[in-house]
Length: 151
View 1 (cartoon, rainbow, N blue to C red):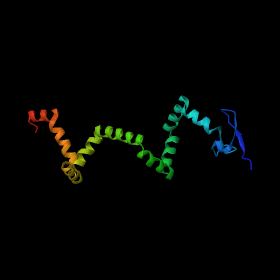
View 2: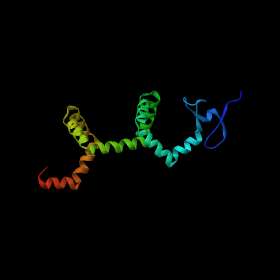
View 3: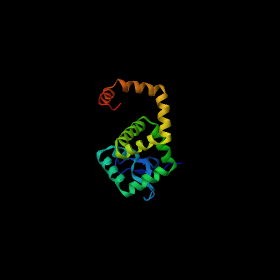
View 4: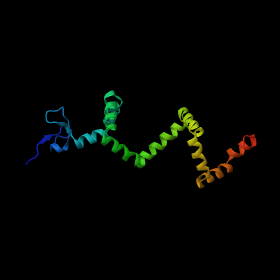
């Protein structure tokens, strides 16, 4: 059986319908441009601007929220978090949060809680905690605090 074809409006080539993204609103249920042309457009400056504008719109926000709740979205998020880029982004976001007022308040609250105290005691007894304490005692910050009488 011969697969139905369509002409791409961007490159002008006749391609099978499997080379086009589905679009329920069009007559033939396919986008007007092929996947390769769409990919090329999305990487261009105009494509990036259009995507940024869409993502800021209410429709874009709703679509992202819907995707995030779907199984496909949850799976994609889990894979991203495990990736190197995902880990780097999370690390930067955490550092930024910890420097913010809300982050400082949350850290102080946690350190005063029972769970925080237990965690800190466990860390101080660990080899990593002992090495960190030794490094701190050799630092200028420690010596300055000692001279000022804070310690």
